[in-house]
Amino acid sequence: MKRNNDYDYREIAGEAMLIPIGPDAGIGGIVTLNGTAAVIWKLLGERCDRDYVLSRLLETYETDGKDAAEALDAFLAELKEKKLLLD
Amino acid sequence: MTLNEYTASLFKKSAAKGVPLSGTFELTARCNLDCRMCYVHRREKDAEAGRQELTAAEWLKIAGEAAESGTLFLLLTGGEPLLRPDFAEIYRGCRRLGLAVSINTNGTLIDGRIADLFASLPPVRVNLSLYGSGAQTYGTLCGHPDAYARAVNGIRLLRERNVPFRLNFTASALNAADAEAVARFAGENGVPVQTTSYLFPPLRVCGTDAHGEERLSPEEAAKVRFGHEKRRFSSDELTKRIKAILSGQLREAPERERGRLISCRAGESSYWITFSGEMRPCGMAHRPSVAVKDGFSEAWNEIRRARDELMIPEKCAGCPKRPVCEICPASCYAETGGYDLPPEYLCRMTDAFLSLCAAYVSENQQKGNLDETQ
Image (cartoon, rainbow over the protein chains, first blue to last red):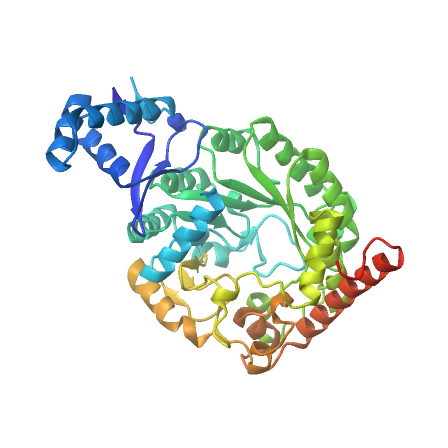
């Protein structure tokens, strides 16, 4: 999988968001991200790999590995559904 | 949270942090039409105006600095921005920077190429000015009877490609009679229409000697405004709104009111850059005005600093009719040449609007459509 490069990540006035900047951004508009979502998006930019992101999240947050994996998988599925992540 | 709530929250945070969230680039002062009430009004072949325009590279440099400083919403306007042969280059460049772009246009230069550009890389919205309902009005007002058909063709091209757009109708003495027909046209095409009933005196064109002969009388402008209210709301909604207006309860943003000081977002979280590269708080405020070529941030900081020099008269600040009046520092300056005298045109327009509201309530009460307590 890879991040859809037709979205630009921006932080404005403390708010994280993805802005459609290219023709393959789909018909949706600006996507707002909460704090954890923004962290995951940036980690996906470092290496677009589910296991890499999960390991970094577990290093950063005190959380149960199983719960974190489930939450991450659900979020990645949502990103794919919105075409923010491409196969 | 709805999109409107999110946007409002973003503006609030930006204001608190001094972020220039919203900007307007006036890409050119020139236009292919010759609308008599236009406040910019430079002709298409005006070489001097053309020479003063920033280049595409200069606009994109400013856009990059603006994005870096936190600009998200950007309006490209003119003159007629599509007159520039490099419009597509500027538009694409701004989009690549992560700016959410809207465009003001008269629609007459929208051809298949431009419509395809907007279809492939959609703007937030195209605001298309429709000046009347036929060739005759376009001839009288804009000097080009054929421009009506070209604007309608532009609308067709946008609709065919599902490009988001709305219509703007600016009422003047030469087209006010078309307001209803334009609203019908918008309804038939399933697009919203925004009506502007108050026209600033064309200060940029005529200086402080501007009289704005093309303007409606204040009383006629009030009628256009009231007509727009009637079309916007259902009967019940309108009645509630009018009651709120008459009782002084309708205040759009009471938390923003600051006595004589400017109360809108101009210079707080939004700015305007003229075709020659001068940053101003808004398109209607002529000062402060700071050259942006030497640095976006420096210009923005100066605009923010000078914002509180813009005021409305003391009498207006304490006027109970202020919530429904179009008064602002820019309109006050354009009408009176200063910030101390109440602009008579706006006083009369507001009084006439309130009279129409009162007459509406009275008429409906007589018809038995309203009870006394409603």
